[in-house]
Image 1 (cartoon, rainbow, N blue to C red):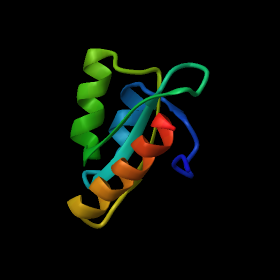
Image 2 (image 1 turned 135 degrees about the vertical axis):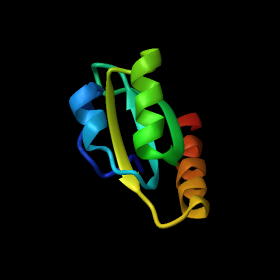
Image 3 (image 1 turned 45 degrees about the vertical axis):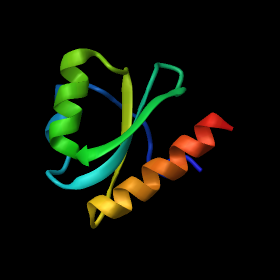
Image 4 (image 1 turned 90 degrees about the horizontal axis):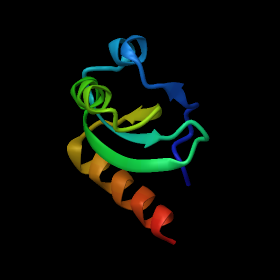
Length: 82
């Protein structure tokens, strides 16, 4: 199942609102197709994604731990591959 959050434009304003917490995020194109699923400190990860132009849209979910973020990433990647 995709993240239960709405897509946001990947821009400076969105990145500025990203929490400084561990989480999982999806990068997508303009049509909402998921291009990548990653985890890490959300604010840092999204700054990098914006700088490199890795996607047009983003949605994220903060987690309580790196382990939980890794579990969610694995689940989401498995969904994308099937």
